[in-house]
View 1 (cartoon, rainbow, N blue to C red):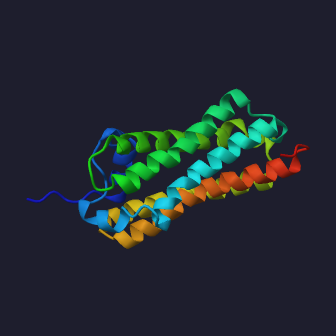
View 2 (cartoon, rainbow, N blue to C red):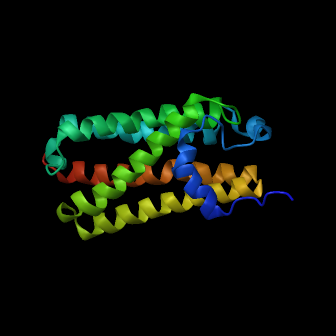
View 3 (cartoon, rainbow, N blue to C red):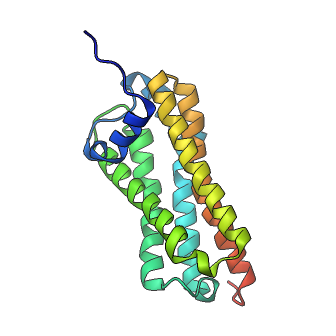
Length: 194
């Protein structure tokens, strides 16, 4: 008797737990020709993380008053890890897609950790110092990002490379865009200039 394919919930739980540590790509090798194009929108979307990480480093270096409640000793290393996430993502999702690679482990472990940090940061540590509009905006962006990731998982399970590509681009852009907008509004409202 053939094993039933995993449900969306089973696939998601596997990918954020023990699946993180697997070198195997979660993408079929047959999709490689569609996804391993280095200068495509899909490929370049990985670097949205790099852009927002570098923006955060610049903001904290030039204007720590924009986020007085968040120590530079924590914020700058976190921002550097976010910037590196773009590199890990590009290697995992583009250069090594559909192949076994250590970059899948690094990308997944980093992404799961960074998402957990963002959820904790904006649920526990920072909301008391943010305006209602900032809190609502950040949570809309975080939930939208997770929604996009789940839609990408669903596309994998359905075998739809086109749907996966769209939802994965949106996953790569939604959270960095949300945090980038927050940083920009904080920076603009602070008394610092670059």
